[in-house]
Image (cartoon, rainbow, N blue to C red; front, side, top):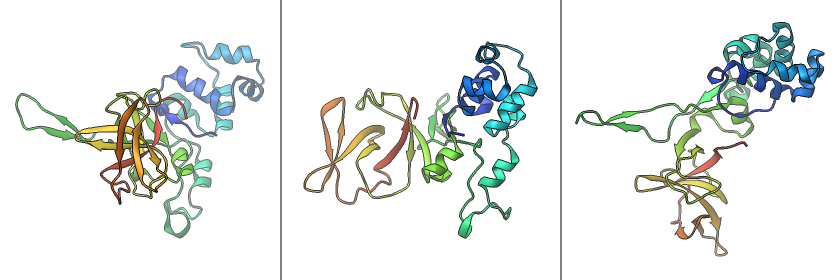
Length: 240
């Protein structure tokens, strides 16, 4: 099953979960082959508020690696798939004590890079850490060697990287420190979080640029390897 970034199953409508199930098995043609029905029947089952035969839905769920519980509620994955992707010893750890891979249908709710500040009737501001409504599949994280404690979400503060990333767009970032390489990063400028492109100069230095604002350039100081200054963007809106 191809890992996706998007809304977790429990946040989908039943109609959305049906089409996600069809997508997971390879499309309407594959869904028709698996169930022994026509593609027109598959499309009809996708109509809003349609009653879908559980026997046929079970066939699709088995192929996709999820349970009927997931189809009905958006929760749970097939236990044998979870076991294969986890540790055969059953202690939740992989080789050399590393965390085991999560089940393919397990979604990770992201925490923000910064807490939200709320003020009410003149009271001192209160900081709140609100998980994003967008979920990352654990399989997607595993494929990119990202751990749950290294990913956060943030909101781009300007339109400097339009059309790739617009002002107000949600971005997923890796907060781990690593050597800088060319690519998209989130940088802190005062209280703002700005999406920028990092590019290497011929003399070995690096600078940040804004695709939509050619005059915006910032040369990085030596030793700027992430942390409080730069965060690598691993996903930003749209489809991967």
